[in-house]
Length: 469
Image (cartoon, rainbow, N blue to C red; front, side, top):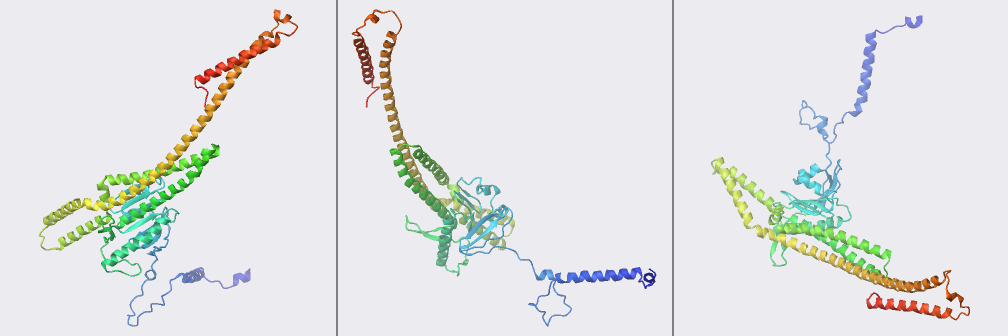
């Protein structure tokens, strides 16, 4: 202890300072690997001033934003957000991408109220509706649920089995039509890139009825493909049910069994379900055909062009020095809007005519599918009536047999009553006859009487048509 205490000791503050300095050096050494390394790809310029400070490390490496970039005919899947659903975006130029979007992104992108997104939810999956809004059109037709604008379409759940044919038709037909239409106008690009021109460019199509060339907007091309896909699905289902119905009903007419009746019941329930779906789509198209104003609101490209014209005129009027004051500018704005509304109302019938012809064609197709379903259902009803007639006939035969047996039982019961009456232990002179000469005549007489009673009752039943063929 004395040797240890006699050794040289450092002052307390000196030892503390050395310990803290060593600790700081150790911590700084540990922090050195986490410092950003200087970029070797951007060496400093020799002409630069040595007093110029280097840029901060945070500005040298900005964070990367994850965003899906589409290519023509194939898209990438974006990063999924919380509460987002899978959507496919396809514009009129064929650029497609698959991404996850939540309700807020859809509302900001398409300008829809939140209640319209509920229509595309699972609660209203069995309903059919076509809604027109200011900048978009909401399509909910059976398995096709999409939001269409003047320049693009957003398809919900594009990877399901029923939606894949619709997506394939969109990727094959719509971009090709738009590229061909803009190639006729000039200014075409390569590799499916977007062409230069106004966003309201439309596709020239040939009217089969008049032979004249007219332009079909992008939203109507999408609506036509959606209706065509739905009608094709209905037609395929009806054809399958027709093929199922013929052997099932023929087997039922030959053999009325529980198994055949259950097969007919399943077929009839499938027909009823399919008829309800067809009726919903048919009623929605009929509702649109009855209201020209609703059909006019579906022209999204026309409304986009009108808004662009109004904005262009207002910007030119604001920059024009001839207009002296704000009163003239407001007067010019109101007069232009009034002229646009008048022109729109004058050409409303011509604008609605294309959509009306399109909807009428598919309305007639749906009406034909509905008639086919009703004819199959009527065939089932006729077969059921025929089976009921057969069962009624068998029931009548059983009733006739039961009546015949009842009459015979009555005759036998009379004979049994007579035999029972003479079997009683009562005093009678007939018991004193010992030679047996009275027994057989008595039995023969009572049996003949009972048989005559049976014949009389049976003849009465034939006379009243209770028995017979």
